[in-house]
Length: 103
Image (tube, rainbow, N blue to C red):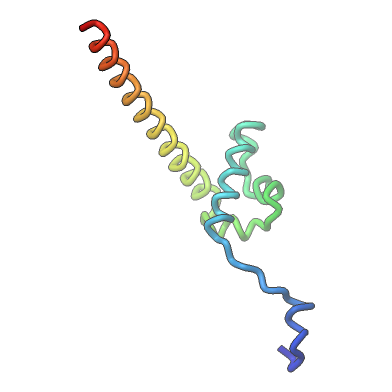
């Protein structure tokens, strides 16, 4: 920046952008906030404070509170779908085992 090779290292250290990691971390923090304090506690300010980021970071990743809630619902829906698939597979496997034992 000002012709001084050391200036950027002192004033503005380079930070690696890890937007996927940040988004996931924000979702984990929001999810934990809802579990601990209930859905009424879910505000951009509360999530930002717990995640140690500004509200602008949440707006960048989710557009606002509605986007954050939609992302939380999508994430939890994926987890629930995976759990249900595991249960279905487990039930089928136990039926097959019980048929083999009975035969």
